[in-house]
Length: 139
Image 1: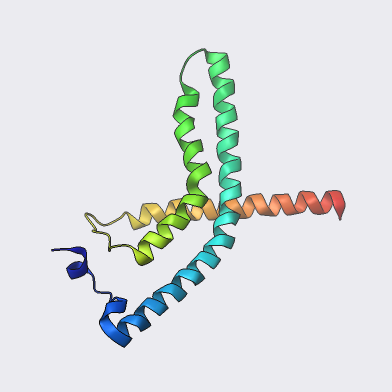
Image 2: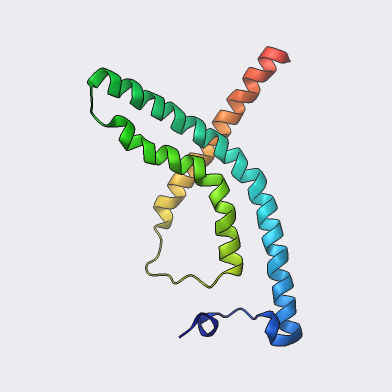
């Protein structure tokens, strides 16, 4: 079964209805990109800040403890944090315009929601503290 047969989405080749679906997909893409541009950025900066703190801590721990590979453990997380925001734009485009993804197993929604809630709370905390510090300093 090819991607076209698996897809329930019409293409431009399906006449007027297909063109309407393609236009709707494009509008959804633009809206999601605009939303992600703002909210993704607001989550990305605190994520990078936290990973930089962890990485700095791992460098200090490795310097004190001598060759325990602390930096190697945190390095992958730091690289993920750096690529998190820009790479998601590709994921949005692939999800909307690419072939439908095949779902092998259902995601762990409860565990994922806990992680998302933590990231949102961390971002809110960082931006609130940043705003407070800026207002106290300059306001």
